Image (cartoon, rainbow, N blue to C red; front, top):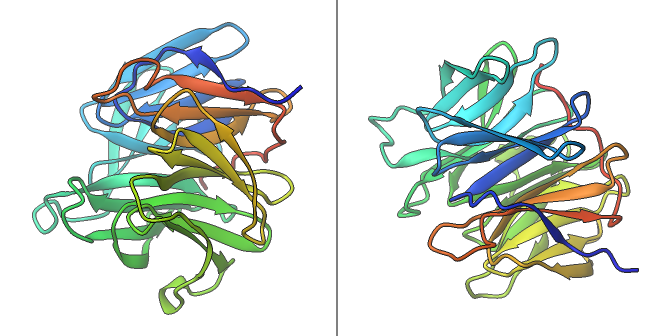
Length: 283
């Protein structure tokens, strides 16, 4: 029986993004960027919680040794405590006076324990975005510059995958290479048009599962770049995905509902596509 997507939560997010799976809690966390909220869904009970923030969060990571979530928001990073709902700013990535139109976008914790986070112009009016690597001491490294819409951050044992949705391309870099000195080689590119690659997740076979914004689908590519399969989705703008569930064989998918009818903005899930990897911890 083919794996079929289903709606697990009618979240009605304006811009759902950044899902991560919390294995100890058996819960999925994600953000609603324009809704200024962090959300949590526990599949076993169906419990859904939503916390409002004073900023627009865009990406998350669980922290080693503490219950906090690291959160990318606006021009920097902060910590959020799910137990209390407390938000604490931590560090600034970009000067809001120098780059007033910028905000954070897609980000993820890498296998090195650092948080990798991209920024972009909120109206995509210019290529003012960058990709940063931030370690637990607060040291910030600029990895790439002149980005349009940074998306797709995923790691296999050999490759780091990164995409700029404005270019409609996902590239791969040899892991631990000085990326600033390399352009990366294209893993796949979409034809000219509205559809573009958004967020991705990697499975335990090194295959990349990518949400196709304005494409109403999820694409799976082999490490060679070959398209293995496409899965049609009931939402127009899927944004990102993460493997979860007790066996990490359930793929959760966030979506954007701004200016679109339901079920756009819903949280989706597909069972049995593949098995994912544990989400790395920050620190």
